[in-house]
Image (cartoon, rainbow, N blue to C red; front, side, top):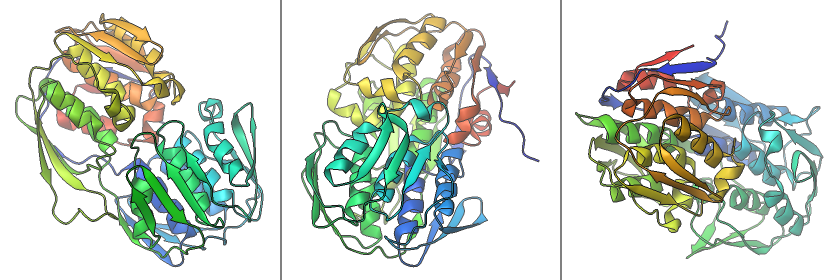
Length: 441
């Protein structure tokens, strides 16, 4: 019998962190490996898979579409591909839980199929915008209905999609990926121009599955009609999960804390650049043999405590650190001087309004701040107050404020933490291993 997830945490104030450990596998890469494996010919082997609720929701949806998926071990997965046109209709709506990435990418997977499908999710996901994906897919000939721009998403299969030339309004790996997945089965070329770099996991993995993806500057081109070949996918440790402990170490590691086997894809590691700008003591030890364009670069990351200085965040780095900004705000709150982040309006439409959620938490901790339409202005302080923080059911908000306890003078209680299991199963154990005094309530 499985244990119910905790409803709240109580984190003891102060302390130090140290040690060497590995966080779970990358969520974004695990989602994509399942989907491309399902569309490929042959059997795809995935190692290092993230067995979190979001990725398991993707696996269940693909199984409902006729894909056989085996898990000989928790982090090892075998996907028996059915080819680009081989998926089967589901008897019921596909429930993707809290997984926004899964829903948006599945829109691209399902748009060129010859059957209809409906995508739903939990209460949080049902509030999230989907037109940013639906609208360009319609330009490819897809027939997609949303409810006032939000789920449920009803996809009327359209096997005769056509490629498009499209400039993304904002840098978005999810939109880009959905269009590339649809483009696999479209007539002609799909050519996408990004206004700024976004995560390129999909492009790398498509190459690993034998698809030719051409990229010149910020223009990505894929020719439809190529078949995917099954591959072996090694999933590195998730940089977004490692981020919480990178900040923890920057604040409180008297002896170095080392995170091993971490994916350091340059489209994901904006947080490293931001922490270095603040004066963090970070050393990167790349793993050999991970520099090919179809592989994810991997490294061990060693961090020690150092005094942090407030900065004005370059807007070009915001898309490269968007998921890590909640814990970056904690680093900013502990830095000397003022930190300003603009251009982060995307945080308003994540699992929660993350800007508002962080601002609310900072107020509890006694941190002077200003909530802006697209960011935050934070005046750092040496020590935080304790108190009760509502995570708004958002896993990244919950984990970020657990790290804040390292600089608190009284315990911090964080409510509504069950959704941490969607992205970081075992966070509590890792936090305790690192040295945080975290208790579940």
